[in-house]
Image (cartoon, rainbow, N blue to C red):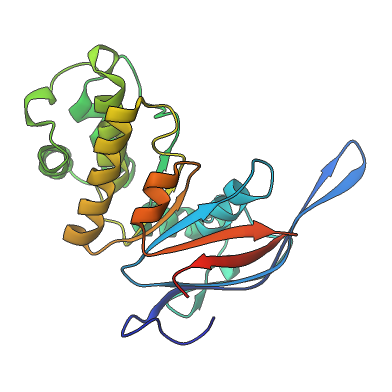
Length: 235
């Protein structure tokens, strides 16, 4: 799984990834030496039963958790050599996260929620607002900018979550069950949105999903077995 997929360079390289948790004094082995190459610009589905480590892998890819052992290289840089402050700055700049539950702030409107990462990054408020408006229009919420998110539909709320994830124009989108809390119609709309954004923004996307329709639309599909990656489709 090294080298290039076609003409695509490797964006993220995982080698010997191990993750253990201690629960009630017992060691729980989740990842046990996982190797994986993720190519620039691709869409990668991670599927499989609950509890096999899909979300753990996603959190490590996005540097939300440190592994027990192993290496994670982004564009050849070993990111876990960074201290926590530098790692947080790296994550804010390079990675966009979308989760099953949108985690929006209900007392704020769509625009304010979307601006949050830019404000945390200490961008001027005007620039943050311009970036937020741009991506909200792109995800189809031009007429919902000033609506409190508590008044939006589930599908619209997830679109705001996607916009918030992409407001700083990250290189990689990591999504954990992004359609899992939606009805079939809204799930399909969010699926099409993610695929379109991958194309138009040149994103590299890794999506954990139980949605087989979504998984089939992505470039490659892997599962986790005995703590290691197993390619199901796409080479």
